[in-house]
Length: 324
Image 1 (tube, rainbow, N blue to C red):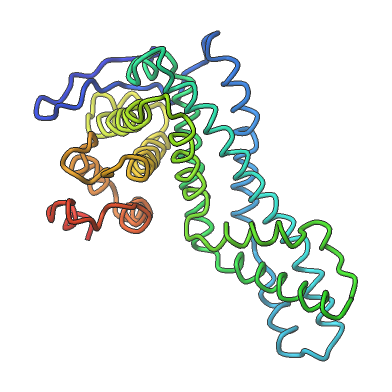
Image 2 (cartoon, rainbow, N blue to C red):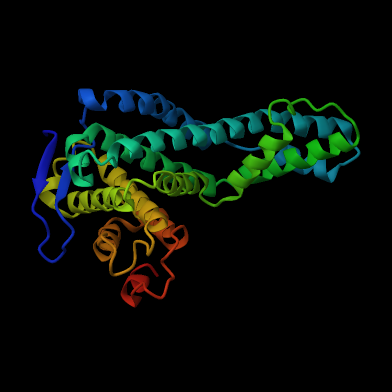
């Protein structure tokens, strides 16, 4: 497929060049290798995290029986025994979010440095752009699975309540060493979010911008808007879409497009929906609307409910109507 194919810029949009990024085959060049290796260690574990989350069944039945029979010690022990290993999994997911934040920080540092323009970065460093895309794809998939699994918060709430009761009664608690009170507080805030991984990435991107005051904010926002443009063009142009070897690359591109829109909306002072935004929101929403409805409802909901500026007065009625 080649590393990069330039696509003609849409004449009605003054948004700079659009690129075809080879999300399927991009390999790191020597200058990319150090950051790529760091991030690759994290991404190798991402698939296993999603598998574990998909298989997460919860301890609802054991918890119900324990609550309904508060004086039955056997049922209390059974529920606690079921919940403790599940909380170990929730701890693993939370710790992975911190690793993902560090990986994103490394990628943003590489892709927004003043050595090249944001567009040149994506042109020269396709393997890093692909990793950035993979982080976004993972994030939206993780949050989609989490949102449809109420057992996660129920299990963790029961764990914390039981732990507090044990502490008050001076009962030694197996599992407390695994998740102490301070960690439990941080995990509680994480899982209270509807989309915890996306919140982690949004906060990490905002923090990256605020910590790198010598770096123009446009370096970061232009990197995000260019990525959104790349994905939109690849999806809406049959000639380029036909280059995907796998149909899964379509959903990958859709996830990445929505992910960078949300990050842009958090980092850019006026957000992604304002007229001055460098993201063609109408075009991006149209691309989503052109897909089978059942395959993109989660992504449309992500734009509706997890963005920061959609309901601002500066957002056109047209765009609001497209997302209703």
